[in-house]
Image 1 (cartoon, rainbow, N blue to C red):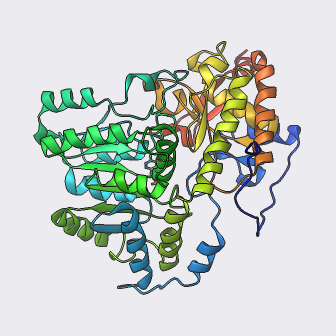
Image 2: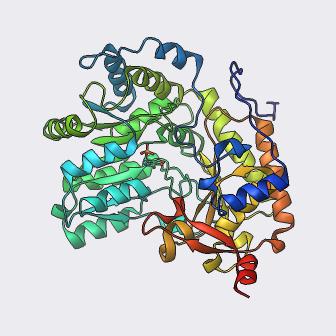
Length: 458
Ligand SMILES: Cc1ncc(COP(=O)(O)O)c(C=O)c1O
């Protein structure tokens, strides 16, 4: 019988202490941070699950490669290794380095999109949406209907609604759709995967209409692992073969190497289109840097060249996805409401169902995130009414797991903290806004507990 215990497929060579605080200290820290976890000093966080972006641990191979970084301005051999490694997996003709994912998006959209265009996606991440809106284009989300029910189980809840895409093309015309995107895995939709069958159907439709298909490929390795586990015909294939098969369906990609690139910074843009690539490189030189470094150091290119390959290792992916599922399944067994099934890089608690007594105007997601910090020093992030205002479809608390950073006992600790908050959920109060910025208010908002504010008013 296979062993049930999940073990990390690595030994730890270098450690970074994390700091305990008392509950009283955390109460004071939270007050000083205006109940907004973005405003906390990271040193006062015990387990930081704010994001999986750029927060992973690098391997000995990556650190060794960093010493080999060629910092030449032009023609660096680190770029050659970066390009070769990426082409080995992604297969696209042009590989353009950028300082992170959103820079790749900005360059692609500046060159390919214009005012009045529409760009469909399964679900746009906030930076792709904002970069499209910046050039005057409309970002259209076309997830499958199951994606809007947090508790509904679907093996590929990140899929795009192909019929809705077809209707959109018929309604607005092919000329207004310069490209279609598919985000793997679908971060804004709960870290859910896209099946090969769905990618194939989207690709076929795009090709029929002559529309280029681009992958937002941040978590391509995790997506490949879900296909191996859940889709017929893929069990015997390696994650790399699955990823290669998927990328053949597209014409290019944007990528944040801070996720499945296993690096702390970096990204890239790929395309098969020579004309577009030339324009993209011109813009790159203007705003990011020369095309053989694109705003990165040679050592960053080396780390990414190795990181993208390591993210596809089966032992790593088995442990990563099992560990995230372990967290989600343990919580669900105790009745904690969360987005099902557990995603690849994160667990999303359903704060509306967790705290039904807190009205949406009092930010149940922010209240729950604050409570997890108070209880156990855990930092998470609200994705809901504070982040999206009245447009919020749900109030979630995302616990994103940095890659290769926390151990199984850290995960057990997180479960313990969430369950003790769950047991006394009726006592948790909502929050009022006391300050908000004109845009992206969640990063800097100030809040205070509802009762405390009424006390001040009285
Ligand atoms: C799906 C998705 N696309 C794009 C990005 C943007 O990447 P970056 O943060 O490197 O700019 C992210 C980052 O979280 C993401 O999750």
